[in-house]
Length: 606
View 1 (tube, rainbow, N blue to C red):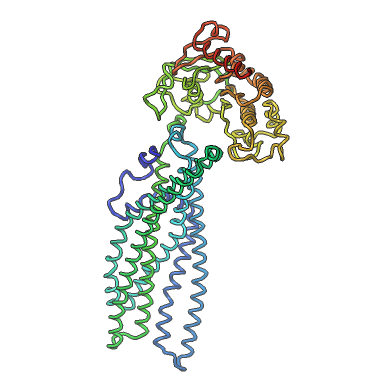
View 2: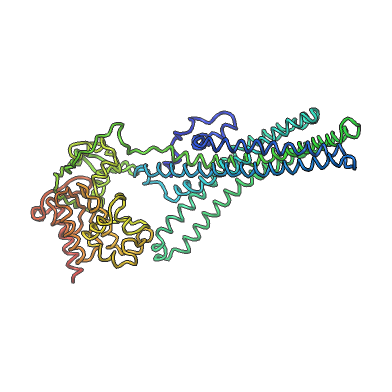
């Protein structure tokens, strides 16, 4: 994940504010627009908050009245009135608190849902170079665990913070209205509380981010191994894998424990200082009562306001730690949002033609993968493919065959030269328009954990059932699909683990057939089929390729013989070009590869 962590957070300020409060809260600022989309929800929550705070702050005044009027028979009517008022206040407080909680929690859920959708959309837009180094498990951790932390920041934490802020301000004002002298003494202790609290925010945020990073690494390791559970079990690696994951989980626990310890120490310190100050001030108030300078009811009122203020400040300290942790999660999310895709549509993309011809041209192309910039995958590569022509790419492993497909699909951009489709540089098109003109049947097809029909129609979600069935029949997949428990509606396991290799490949071919694109890219699309099915699918592909430009990565001779032209690659360059007969007679690389295959097949047959 180096690429993520090293990326400059484009959606954050270039530098953190100098103030510690700003430094802690700045990662959350990019998320404010998500909340501000729902101004009516915020307004209703604030109204409920004001009502609830006002109801709570009126209770100490009622208590003062009861105490000062006494509990004699003469004051029974007044006492009853005070108790009745307290019940009404309690009912108002209950309704307002429930309303505030509902709207604030709904806001938090809404903000996180929108953020997750935007984050996934952004991840879907990032190019292949990003995913060459990114770990899927860690990205999922940011998409789920980190956004859950933010939900508490915009939900419960925001609710508690606003409630206690209002309560603290209201309690302070009422303390001054009750006894300015005692209130001034009580407030003198606030800087002792607030300054260490603010100073701890950056440390809490840093520790919380480290804990999330560690957990994400553990999640990435688990996801990687669970997706390859058969390989793990087949190699007897369960014990080692479980032990390694346990170590990763322990590291995550220790990091989280360190962050929690910091938050606990901050909370304990705040509570100790706050309530020690309150007790000291109350002792002074008790002296005033004994001296006759203050009534018992007035002191009781001040005590209640002081307790409300102190408890609110203590709650704010706890919330501050939670907000600091959420800021750490926001930083991790911002790191992803700051990564810009290298493959984007131009400002004014070229419109796709009404009908593609399928003419392809590689013009002196040079390319090296971002993960291996010193090793050229293609060198001065020039190749033209006429509309409707079938070209087979042959060569040893690492010759650059798959790279040609990746560049034509614009998963990467060339380092030098150009690639054109119908005479237009493919970089001039919107990548979505370009890829709609190309159908791909890879050697290792991706099957999703949805229905068979949805897998065939992947990327063509509006396709009719008749078109899906027709594509399956042409790919020789209809018979085995019909034999499944629910036919085309059968749900497949993740990555298609319930299907054989040949069945997965036939579904991928059906997907390419349904795409009905003018350009077909076939990466040895029949390699996993037996001889009988291979012949049937070859016939289907022969029909599908008719009138379409087709480029085939070929390892098997049967595929090569169907091609109009064979292009032989070695170390990123074209070394031979021609038909099977001419290349075999030339005695070059193709002849050696063909002989090796013949010898292998003859040995297998023997």
